[in-house]
Length: 170
Ligand SMILES: [Zn+2]
Image (cartoon, rainbow, N blue to C red):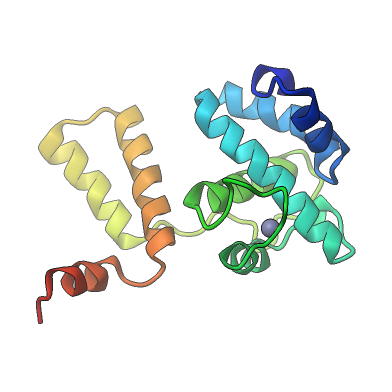
């Protein structure tokens, strides 16, 4: 399954031999089933491998994933193999999705930290707006909401504050 997304033998070897290795083929299949395109799937799979290495350094396994700790880690990540997966909302999203996948397999507990976070109010409003004013389909709304939520995570603080700051408004 991983071969669908990665062709380089070295990369495949790296992914399969890592702590998340045993779960990656199943994760790739889940991503495909849920309609993720190859570009996103590759990023999420890299994120899954990344989090495996991160928890291994702490003497734990991928099923002990602590997403909050990983979120902190990627902000200052110096992992040699995490190229392209640093400080990127795809990394956090991929990690979260990977954990949810493990929860679905019954491999890790659906602890509070692993549960899908409540949708930010701003994203909920955005979805309503898309439906009402743009006549967007459910699939489009889902896609846009995902990007919006990812963007918010990237900004971390209140996006409205950032906008004001950028425009030099009071
Ligand atoms: Zn790292």
